[in-house]
Length: 112
Image 1 (cartoon, rainbow, N blue to C red):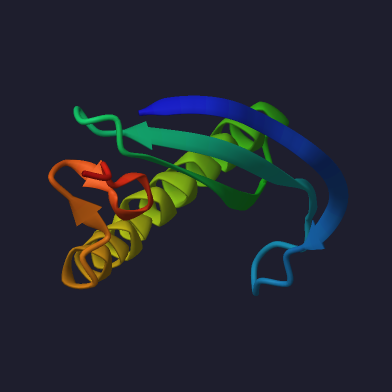
Image 2 (image 1 turned 180 degrees about the horizontal axis):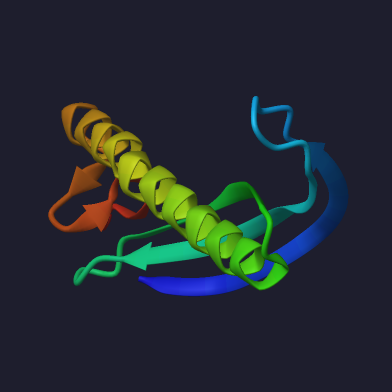
């Protein structure tokens, strides 16, 4: 797995008001949105590339950046692994339609 790009784009502070019974304090929280691109390559060279998003709201700006990036990479990896199902189904369709002939593609048949 290769993480191609991780970018945290947005950091918006806002004030969260805690209206509990005993306390009446306000706390600044940050929301960070991150985007990641992941490329997964199998041993035979088959690969897929997918993107993911992460959005976290916390009171610590640094922790917010770290967790949003981690969530974005996890989301992208999940999408990349699930996309192999489509690759396998496309391959099976090509096999049933005789797309591959003697190890060559059907369009590159050797004429006798």
